[in-house]
Amino acid sequence: MKKSILLLPILAFCLAIGLSLVSARPVRAASIVGQADLPPYTYLGRITDYNHGSLAGVSGSAEIRARRTNGVLVARSAITNFPGTAFNYVLRIPMSSQPTTGRVLYGEQLLFEVDDGGRVFTTTGGTAVATAIADDGIYISTTGFSAVGAPGAVERVDFMAAVTNENGVSTDYLATIALLMDLQGIEGTWTTDGDLDGDGMSNYDEYLAGTDPLDPDDSFRFLEQALVRSEGGTNVWALTFICGPNRAYQALTADTLTPEPADFQPVPHALTDAADAPTENWLNTDTTQPYTRTIYVTDNGDVRFYALTVQ
View (cartoon, one colour):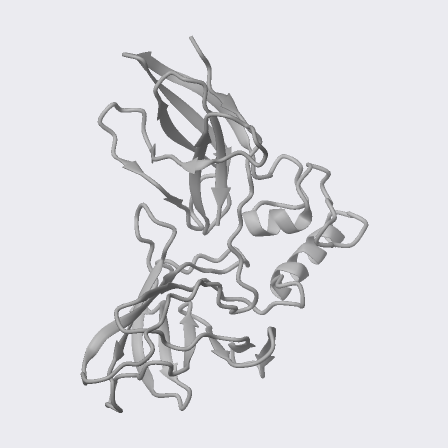
C-alpha cells in the first residue's frame, strides 16, 4: 500500500500592517452613469487581532463599519466566522450614480472602523503607523486605503486590529513577550528573524501563527499523521497539528515535490473520520480552541504530500 508523506508545514500568512488593506483591485468600469441606485460594492475578508483576542463572536457589538471621510456612517456588519471560509466579515456598500443620502459614489474614499466590543480601531489616509489616542481606548491606525470600486464588484480586504510598530507587530504583544522573558529569566531581545526558543520557527513566524515564541514545544507543525482506514482504493488520513487562537487553516496537497516550489492545491477536510462527515475548505479557531486539532483528508491511494497554511 502506498503511503502519503507528511511535509513540514508551509507557512502562508496573510498579514495586514496596522489596519493596512491587502487586496487585488477588480477592474473598474470607465464611468458609472444613468442609475441612482446601483448594486452594492462588497468588501469581504478576515479581521484578526494578533494580541490573540478573537474578533469573531466575542461581543454582540463586535462589528466593522464604513464611514465617509466626513464621518457619516454608510454601512455596518457583524464580525462572525463564515464556516468553510477564511472570512469573518462581509460589508456591502450601498452605491448610487449621483449624490444620495446613505449611498456612496464610484471612486469615493471610505474610513473603516473595527469595533471589537471594547475598543474601536479606525483607518485614515497616510503612512502605515499606528498611534494611540489619549487613554480612552480608541486607536487610530493611519494607512493607505482603497476607494470604492465598480458597482457589483467584490474586493478582499484584510484588517489587523492592533497598534503596531514599524514591522507591523503589535506593541501590546511585544510588551507581553518582554514581560514573560523577564519573569522566566530569558535573555536576549525579540527580533523578527530571531528564534528565542530554538524550535526552528522565527519569532515573527510564531507571531503570525499564534504560537508561543518562548516554548519550543509550541510551534506551527504537524504532530502526527495516521492512516484511519483504507477501503475501496481510498485512504483516510488523520493529520494532527498545533494551532493558534483566532486563525484560519487550510489543508493543501500535491502529488510531487518537483519542481520547487511544489504545486500545492487546497484539499477539503473533515472534522471527524465518519464516512459521511461533511467537508470544508477552512478550519477557523477562536480563543477557546484546544491546543491541538485533527483534520481528516482523503486520497485515492496514490502518493500524496500534505501541507498546512494559516491566516
